[in-house]
Length: 198
Image (cartoon, helix red, strand yellow):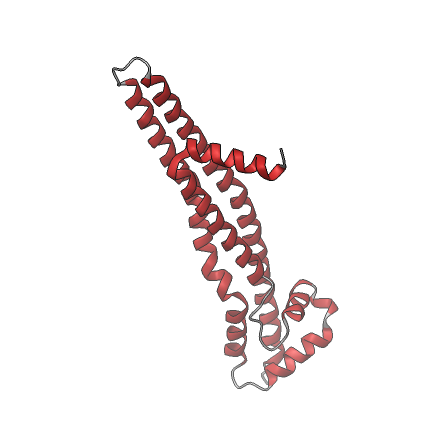
């Protein structure tokens, strides 16, 4: 049996045991994956202005290696009437997307274990319903189906939630570092553009 056939067989077994909550978790997993990919992409500065995305990454991560890029940025800053506002607008272009999407990504990631918990409750409800049945043969099938649903959905929620939380936390750490580096650069540029007081 090929790997693809094994995966499809396993997915069919999990979906029949996990019920609709399993499929809701799978849909949530795709949503989380999309959010993480867009966050990673947004940290590569696709909406960069004044400098290219690559130049911004180089300037923020290795400021000492980019004196000519820094000079071009300083020259652009010297042509504006309000350098502070100019730098704020640049920061908005660089960081607006991740700033909006990180809270949403964390909410979706937090929803995965909670949705798994909903599957646990649903499975236990089926289990206790099977235990209350007066039939001789039916209860064991209903009880095992309920326990299967509870275990599958709980495990799926945790398998989705824990790794994606780690990845999102790493991306957030990278974002915070880039914002801090930009604030330092902003302060340095504003000090250089301010004429000394006499």
